[in-house]
Figure 1 (cartoon, helix red, strand yellow):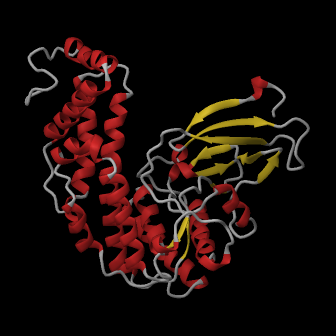
Figure 2: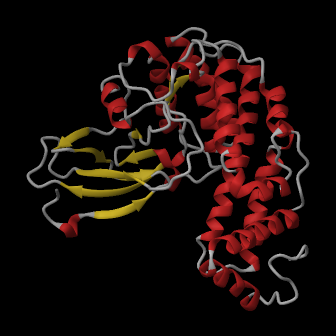
Figure 3: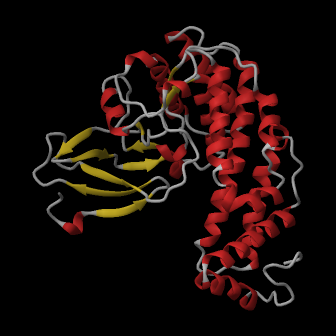
Length: 373
């Protein structure tokens, strides 16, 4: 497509996709200097969130003119391309936990207002979720129940054959989901709208004119507008005072276009944030464990670092999941035992690499399967 292989940048590795960026010879009528990206889904990917739309590309075409800050789409033969925004992600400019300047948060609030205007009956885009999987319009309790059920069945239960020992060592059981339901139920009804459902710092790109662009819409769905705000606040890690100010502005923005969109937010926002903390436990346990299998060398320090990260996530979800959190050392040991067990089941290659840890790491007194290892 580029006419010059040396002009192709990539692959750029994201969690869901592998991306290539290139210019097109002869221009496209949208600026000769523009570069375009094509993406390929990564094979064998574990999905931790529901997907609603059959095609992200078709969704974005349907949103053209309705949502600002979506990169242009073009078709080149059989391949759909999206304009590559030259700039930096919000996360690269302002790291997690830092304050975002008002000129950018204003654009985020504006995006929420535009999303609130897109109602479920206004888009003719193929959806993958069945009618039975869609809660009735405005039923926010039913909407959240379907998210909990997805986490329970598609993330926890589906991965039990591989992670049962690790889940149980971390005191994560099926009953945890019933405790979660008791903590987060009885939400107020609110009119449904389009949700991006993944608005974090790496999914916003700031160009040279400080315009904010929103990317990665693959988790978009229709549902409770307050859930989109809760997900955003959880992922952005704003300073507390900025999170409060943004919440107030969000209420004003969504109410101005769809009255009732912020109804009951004072009681319901903490419940939705509690669900996000609980959901992250199962996602992070699996991702952290699998990341250990990709390490070239495995030593005691890697287990300690991974254990400390997971302990923090588990501690944040103690109340919604109704669980006691194991010590940092126990979390690290549980990861070590899981990897040892997996290496025994995965063949000599992984076993050999894992055994190397005990020779190079100076841990000769312990074995991968010993209680103290």
